[in-house]
Image (tube, rainbow, N blue to C red; front, top):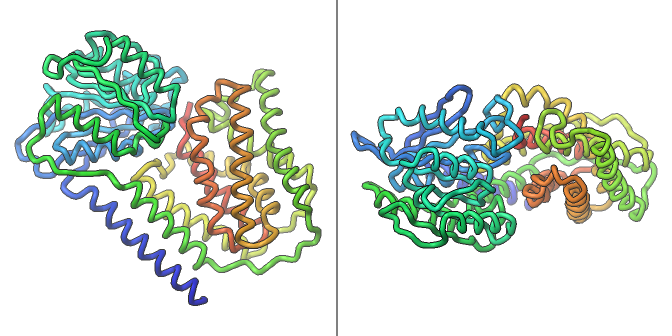
Length: 488
């Protein structure tokens, strides 16, 4: 190993160690209880030294394709401030095996909240006379409904609210927030504010109403924004009073996780042995490689659009909401691209297989498993895991094609192709959403795609050949798709 690679490896280890320590520190002074209520996984977070004192209960509901994990930062903020907090996975999400109903305004969301509320209310630290509920996106449908069905709910916080109607009386003490970069949800929030009677009212009588636009954030980043956490906590403290034993806390876990990701990628790029350069039997011109990528991506979008017109349920393919479309899109685009290019496909060498598995293991552990405590539910339940081999095979042609097209040149070439690949995916999926409106939910996740692709590209920058790139990419991305998208 060269001196520069050794230096980068040591730096990567230091970043990982420091980040893990900081992530662990975010839990200091708190206790955690996990359980299951009629198949709904839940977690209770509470101050450590509770004694006989009872605390207000804050229910925290996640959005579509979210989970209790993505709301964990808010839960930590509230728990450090002296509240007992409950998060859970709605039907079809993360560790919940029950299929979700497609209509987020049907009673199933409220039923989930009611079941969790019934269970966590039995916790000895919960004061059932002091209840508040916080929701994000789809979770606001549950929160706004719950607070009206249970008028004793003293405060409701709706982050990026959906079209669930409210009244001038209920919910009590309603705080609305939306991100500056999510104009549709800003409109929804303004509509809810108008229904609630506009800004004003009094916290003590339960009539308070406020609306805040959080600057510089969109639908996902608003969950982690310090301003979101601060406003929500101030609203709860104004309602219930500052809790005894409250500790100052700012949720910086996303920053530490980012450093951990950087450390993981540094280790993967420096410690995993490099594939020897492979002899290219036939070099493909740059113009043709770009044309194949764009044409195959656009063709897949149009083919699936036509299939949708003929009755194919694009939004519920393979029993996965929206994610099934992505899986089929990758398969069609990959096969189309291979048909256009007609490359010579050789069997993978042993070193390619080994390096692909090493890259996947590094990404699975350093980005996925640790991320499972920060933003994404990573471990797959059995209903998701049985689909993994099929999804892996569906993604393999496209990943192999991208590995071949980006295999010419050095490290910089991989990064340039990552940018072009990300831009192409963004463009064709944006088109898919426009011509197939029921796929609109994908728009909220489009900003994440370049990051996921970059995670995979970095450890592959020093590798050669299509198979290492293809196998590691198909394994990692297929797992992530199954971890995120809800089951229907």
